[in-house]
Amino acid sequence: MKEKIRAWGKDLGFAAVGFADIDLRPAEAGLADWLAAGCHGEMDYMASHGMKRARPAELLPGTRAVISCRMDYLPEMRRPAHPLSPGLSPARGERRQAASLSPCGRGIEGEGGEFSTSAIISRYALGRDYHKLLRARLQQLADRIVAEVGDFSYRAFTDSAPVMEVELARNAGLGWRGKHTLLLTREAGSWFFLGEIFVDLPLPADVPTSGHCGDCTACLDICPTQAFVAPYRLDARRCISYLTIELKGSIPVELRPLMGNRIYGCDDCQSVCPWNSFAPLTREADFAPRHGLDCATLVELFAWSEDEFNARLAGSPIRRIGHERWLRNIAVALGNASPAPEARSALLARMDYPSALVREHVAWALSRYPG
Image 1: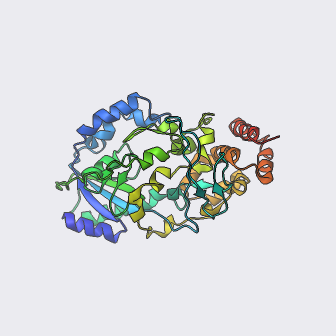
Image 2: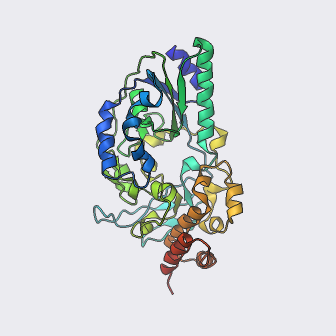
Image 3: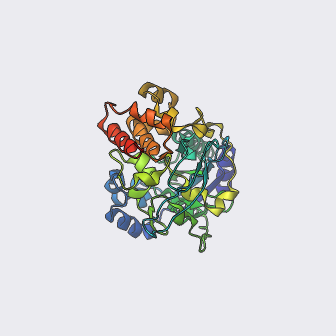
């Protein structure tokens, strides 16, 4: 039965399908400690669910096994982005120099903290929102199993409930947890989404994969904000993905200069991972870049009205942060950009924007321009 499910999953576009049991007790202590330290920041839902995240049977009573599925999302971009920041490491006090070609090759980040005016958006968000696509494929897989074995109790998840998806995928033999906390595989690095189907079927678990990070710390060292407080431990409050997506209010002033031109998410820890050199491009057309987001400038994106933002990003995961936070993020990036006249003009045009949040970040950005 397991091999049939794997084959059906491959037919539906999943790169790999594995099977895990529901015993996540070894992960509970780490989760409790992470929450107690406040590393989840304002993501209150992480704490409100308590240990339910590590107890699948509390989400779906009667769960006996978990089907874990992987779908590759790395898109082909017109120019590859390597968004790595220069700056001082708060933890080590040393310069982390990295030249970064913008997605369109329009500029290079160099010494002195100057940044290209190109916008950097996490690769997973360049195309359509993965939630609906992945959830639909999981449902189709569940329907195929029902057709084979008859009705059974199941529930599919794609970031839609408190699920420890990386731990489950590791237990299902799909890879190992990297030091950047993401799942890694030999053949696909970490450029993929995960989805799960909780089932009450007695499907035997696969053998977990051993880790292969060795002594490498590239992902930890490259983080612009030093969000990794230790291997396998991320403080979300310092993570650029959290700051640009989950944080609803003002971005801490001390972190703004370290964010560079990243306006939605951050891929740095993945981009430098040696295993990602083996990652294949996605076969899903929906994950291809839309509206030139792989080749856009900060100035042009900052000029979008709220109506344009909603229209152009319909069906995109970016739309959920709203126009206000979109402008907040870009204002910070413009504050880190080379002081070009067009960038300054763009900021001046938003000085009297109705949102106090946007005005605050615009004022900060302008304060970094000479004169």
